[in-house]
Image (cartoon, rainbow, N blue to C red; front, top):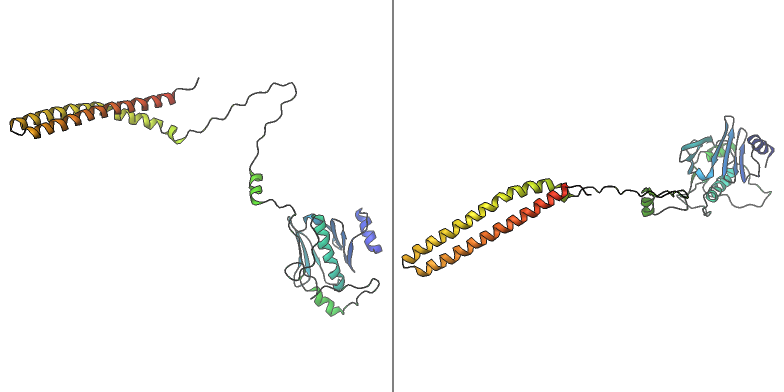
Length: 282
């Protein structure tokens, strides 16, 4: 750890040893356990690794660190050593995984974290750093895009669990010791469709009640007509036809009387149901 990094951490009131650092003349990155710090002439920005979602840069080497709240910081990568960049951001990825309680995954070949360069830097023996590229090569390398995509949270509830979590749960608060429990009155149930139709049921019952008398009158008329027609047929030497007319008319007349009684019974029940719904419970 360089004196410059130590001075920066002391100024921020942060102790401990950094996991990794990335420095150039006018700026530096410091990676701590759970924290990423960037400092340049414009000031110091901090990003908590648990909140880190994505790190990417555009074709001009402008780095952006994204969190759920938006872009936490922007920094130019121009001037940083490409080999150091290659080694720094995989460590950011691993530290982010640890902060989110995720296992550290190997660097994917495509679609995941992309470092500056075509392939990751090969492992080297300590005290044998790779030679720095020429300034033009360094600028070209820093223009390439780097992306760090944070893995999702390790505890991801299933869709059914999310739906249950969104449903509010109502619990009864425990009464204090010695206090008498007060019964909670149940909420009145919403009227169902049959109860809502009770006023119409009463109106229909009144309308149908008028048919009871008419049915009885019709039964009497049918019976008298059958008797008269049977007499005429009997006197006209049609005794068999007269007997059949008398039987058919009599059965029809009795059926109408029975239907009138059934109709009156239905009207009585309908009125009783309608009246009971209007009477409040005791």
